[in-house]
Image 1 (cartoon, helix red, strand yellow):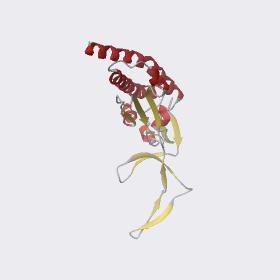
Image 2: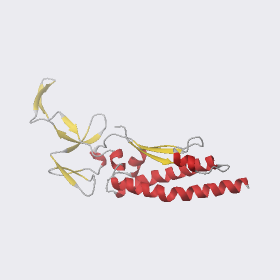
Image 3: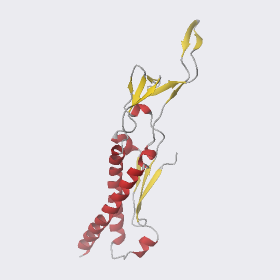
Length: 193
């Protein structure tokens, strides 16, 4: 999955139209970086507020920030990652299967189970096929419930790409960036004056 990308900063005609007083490029890159960092923090908060029951640390790890430089005043926030294992969505075993809280409430998954593999990985699984198979191991017969398949929920890029999350991040950038840029320009002017 390629992931979701959010750009913070000005490019093209918008960047060329701005006046460029002394120190503008440094102030611009600092403002873009501060806004991008606040956007990353807000993305974690908004994903959780949109109802995705993920740990903040899980969301934060999937967000990579490429910082702006004076030569390139654009910061990029990329959300990458594969679908998240359902065990991360507060999975709980029940008599009928497993319940998970993926988004807005707890949902049952019938016939699912939680298991820990030999590798130490714990996940939510379901059996594939119609029945158990008889296996012979060391001269003894036993029944196997294999094969099994692990279940996954939405990925972090899907959660960040949610319309409500995107709208909140767009509003945040539109509100914060001009104020931060004005502050950085004022600081640059005081430094030079």
